[in-house]
Image (cartoon, rainbow, N blue to C red; front, side, top):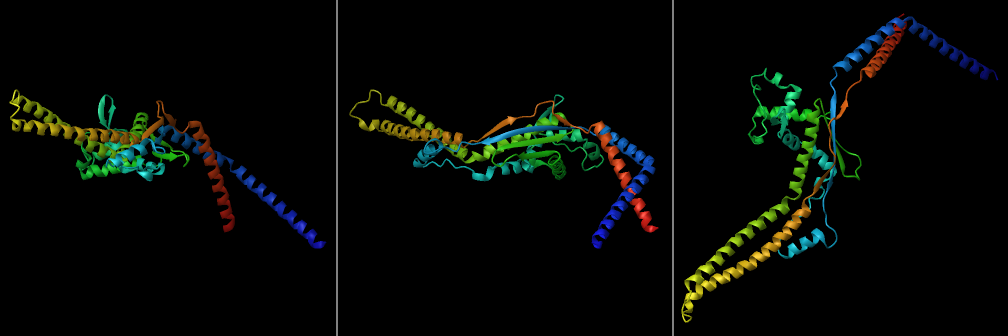
Length: 361
């Protein structure tokens, strides 16, 4: 029984020591309350100052979904492609998973799409400039560029071929691309892998830029997506259209030729059959070209149906509407947070400083 009593006494002594230690530290901190309050006040003042000079960020949010007609059963596109195949026409196929939602997200952040969006025109104060120029104005980048002779006077017009840019323009545009695709500035997400709804968010210090650039990026992705998905079918339709136009011209020429030959043999002696040979040849050309044109027109219509089926749809769900959501650090919140953080850090400093003194003593 004695060991158990000793254990209880030891526990009681340890608990008493803990309580005494806590009282000791509380008393120590009370004696330093002026220091803690002063640091807390300084922290609150710093928090309010930060909130006062903090620039608001405007968030533009756009959501869209991708849809494409994949056909069904033996009808729709599969039926059109089957008929076209029997006529020797290849209408192309689907791009498969190349444009899955995950790939679309990466595509929207690619340098290709962002640079295309940056070099598109935007009207600012009744003046048409590129988005890149507008971004430079917002961020006041030209002030620092003008101090360097090699960068002074560099512009990014919207009506110039991207391939004609100089090395300096390429370098600066790359820096702008990196700044815009920063996770704090550009966010692209998909809530659920089972849902093809994608959310695009653009954050900047300029409300108008956030809205317009968000819509511009979505438009560039939509254009690229549609052109790529329907490229093969469009090439086939264009080729068929050229063939049909060519045959139609030949048919018109043949019809005119038949009429001309008929005029040449008008009231001709029926016994002179050799004179009617050119007219008969022209009639054969008319019949042949008519048959060819009929087939080509049928194939062209099938190709157009295939092109419509292969052209996907980018459906906008929500687009950014002014005024945009504004994200700015509140003064009251900054005051409370700064004061709390200042007080907390002062307590840590005093406690560790006192412990260090005791170790040295």
